Amino acid sequence: MADKPPIDWDPRAEAVLQDQIAAYDELRRRCPVAYSDYLQWSVLGHREVRRILEDHHGFSNAVSRHLSVPNGMDPPEHGRYRRLIEPYFDDKRMAAFEPACRELARRLATALPKGECEMMASLAQPFSLRVQCAFLGWPASLHEPLRQWAGKNHRATLAGDRAQLAAVATEFDGYIRTLLAERRALGADAPDDLTTALLRERVSGRPMTDEELVSLLRNWTVGELGTITASIGILIHYLAEHGEVQRQLRQDASLLPAAIDEILRIHAPLISNRRVTTREVEVGGQTLVAGERISILWASANRDEAVFGDPDEFRLDRDPADNLLYGAGIHVCPGAPLARLELRLVLEAMLQASDWWSLPPGREPVRARYPGSGFSTLWVGLE
Image (cartoon, rainbow, N blue to C red; front, side, top):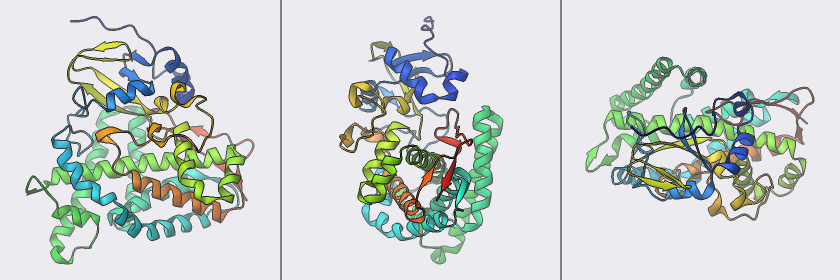
């Protein structure tokens, strides 16, 4: 058995957890591929991450023992499911969903009280939950159960409690199985929504199994809830802290799409994704054998000075191809059009519903801790 590599860092060290972005910046500059007992190999450099994303033969997405459609699949299996789901995020569907999404964002933004307001509980979390239910066609009666479920999942994730994580996963799967069963029972009278449409889809000439449907809907929903919530908090905080950018966007809303992508490059809403090596590979000067666990640290790669210069400099003229916010390669996020639509509309609503927002004195934001990103608590002063 080969000796373990030297330990380069401790991802669970308090200094890392208190400010993940700063810790990754420091580590990347001295060690673009770093080893730890906790994560094994963490890849921090932009070039090194690109190397992994473009080699799906050497770096597999099949990292979980549980079915994960299509995130945890490799070609050719991945392609069959990917082709099935991509039309659900095309321009036609986004245009059809935009009015409902805009109205939801408007209602939440205009309901915010003037003065000091905690944005994660008042805006980020309810928006991400309700907009995802609206997109999938799920009833409003699920809003509160799913809100409570998200809290339980968050606490179990932070605690690393595998038994509790398994329990909350089973609970969530139960919600989806109930929705599928209700639609099957209704037959032709089932609501004409995305969830019903998935029941009609076929893979390799056969209907999807309940296990496949549950996995697909779980991945869409759980991933969406976490990253959209984190993204909204990051965007609101950045514009509160950088008044010149907030002013620029108030004057020209057409800049919102590029500004959102750039702010989320600076402060990633998703810290990492996993891969596993399938053969001996070389990355960042390290030779890795088959079976090595890898964490792609988006929160580092998208701040690599070799590509972006000063990683904290806000620029709207960067090459969009360099921004790994939604990944790259065959596994690039299929839901990126939906996420971009939601984030644009929620920021538009916030800018229209307020004259200004800023960070109030004495109300320090509380950063989310790994594996989360963004803020767990964020107070702003709304005018």
